Image 1 (cartoon, rainbow, N blue to C red):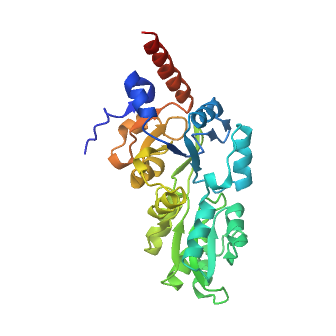
Image 2 (image 1 turned 90 degrees about the vertical axis):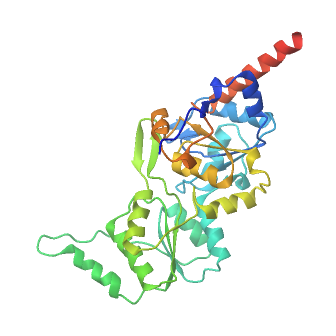
Image 3 (image 1 turned 120 degrees about the vertical axis):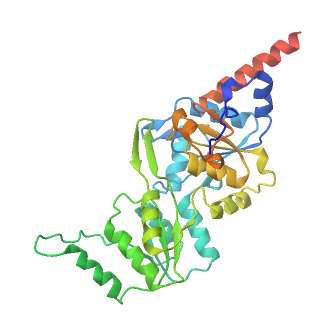
Length: 325
């Protein structure tokens, strides 16, 4: 199916009346962080001025990240460096969303987690019995068949009962981790499979990206025959959480800002939000124009948050000229 993208407009290509209408069409901004506010190499130019301007204009701003590799304290520090007083309630962290969900289902069994130590610490701090590993490489000797080691994963009986397998980004993920997760899922038909971040790439900046956890989640889903409950973007469970946490009663008055098509724009569609794609991270204009899933396309796009500075400037100048007439 060929999708008509002619209606997807760059913010600065709108007419003055369209710009004014757009700026008046939302009260709340829910924004991704990586690739939108900053890249791994540093903040995106002028994002601090743009976000401060939006807050000065009366917009409520909160942040929804799929990145569980930072603590909440680190998030708050990064925002503080941008001159923004962002509180914990204004940041949605995938590990804390997972904690909230596990508590809501009254999880009593152990949780096997493939993720960073930061992510696992949030689970431990919430009182869950977290299993991980293996941490040692599996011997790969010429005279033995290393795959035979996995037989022990199926037959061992010393591990606690696992009620949930949680997958997020893990820089040390291996076949052994995936096999361990597969065995826990097969051992207990009621074991939950929960995914945090589902990104297929993690952009470092506009020219570098890393393979994301989405591919590994897909491998586990296919090998286990189980479908993951997605607690990161663009999952329905996260959508329900967001609408409740921020008391969203008019989703059409919320602007969702992100740099990824499936995760961010797909999430915006799921929630009924207006959608703005930033070209400052993981998606280029060419990628957007080639995309053929309408539910994962934005209503508008911009180069970066800095375009809001120009947007408000042009509208203000037009208003001043109008008053002089």
